[in-house]
Length: 315
Image 1 (cartoon, helix red, strand yellow):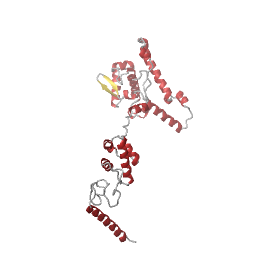
Image 2: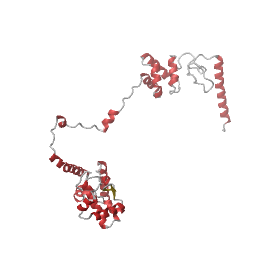
Image 3: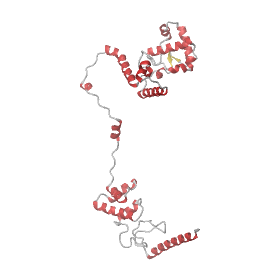
Image 4: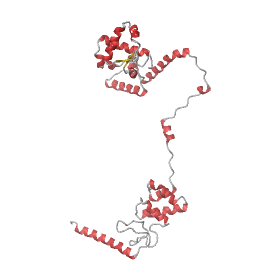
C-alpha cells in the first residue's frame, strides 16, 4: 500500500449494483470498512471484529452482522480469525505512468468535447481528479517525503562514501542499446563481388560458399571469373545458373570464346544440359557428326511445327 492516510474511492461505486442494493446503514458501514482496511495497511486485511467494534463505537455483534451482510454482497470474505476486503489491494495499487498519462489525455478529450473553457491549471484547483501529469508526479514525491519523514527522524543517516557521492551513470537510450546489439555484417567474398560487377546482381546466398571456395581471391583467378560471368550474361544465358559458370571456370574456358563455340550448329562451349529440354543432354567434348545432324533435325522439325501452326490459325 502506498499510504495509510487515504484510500482510493472510485466514482463507479455509484453504479455498482453490489453497493447500490445495500441498505443505507450497511452502505455506510462498507465505506468505514474500506477506511479501516486502508488504515491497517495490510492489503485488505481488517482488524479483529472486537477492534472494529471499538474503533466504530459499536458492538461486536453488530459488526459481525454487518460483515455477514457485506460477505453476502461479495465485498468482504472471512480469512481465518480476520476478515478481508476482496480486491482491495488491486484497487488501491499505485497507478503506472502510462495509465496516468492515458487518464489525463482522456480528460483532455472530454474537456474539448464539452467545450470546457477552464484550463488545466484551473481544473487542478477545482477538482483534484483533473490535475495534470506534472502535478501528479509532484504529489507522488510529496507522499514519499511524508511517509519517510518519521524514518529519517529515528534512523541516523549513514556517512556518504565516495561511490555514493559519484553521479549516477546516465542510462543508455533504447536506440543506443539497439546499436550495441546489432550483429556485424559478414563481408562479401571477393569472387561474389566480381559476380555482382559483371552480372549486375548477386548470386543466391546459398552459392556464396561455393563461389568463394572455387574461385578464391587470387587476382588472376578473379579476372578470369569476371570474364566468364560477363560472357555468360552477354550470351543471354540465365544469370541464376551459377553452377554452369563454375563449370566453365573449372575448365578455364570463357563461354562463346574460340572456334565453333558461338556457331548455331555447335554445342561446344555450352553448359551441361543447356539444350537438354530440346533433345538430349550433351557433354563438353566436340560433338560428333551424328549428334550435329540429330540436333539440326530437331531444330528443323520444331520450325516446321511452328509454320504449320501459323498456317492453320484463322486469318
